[in-house]
Length: 80
Image (tube, rainbow, N blue to C red):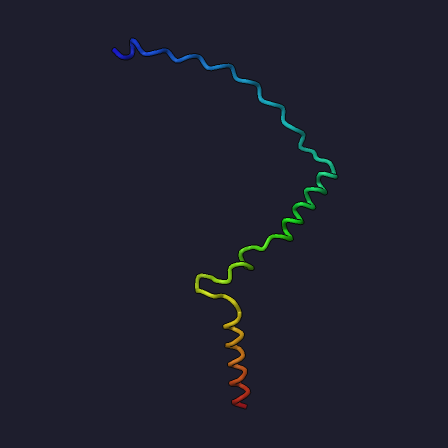
């Protein structure tokens, strides 16, 4: 019985035409400007490698390796 007294769905409004696509060509000045902006961003970028000095195994700095190499060289000189 509910379907007899339910309101009817209104019709949809007409669809507006799609806007025209802008030209894909850009001038040389705009290209130079974009290239300069991208170069500035690349110079400012640090990245994860330079900011995070730990890895899945802990500290990945070269301090431990350098110390280990120094100890080995010291021992080799002592043996000779």
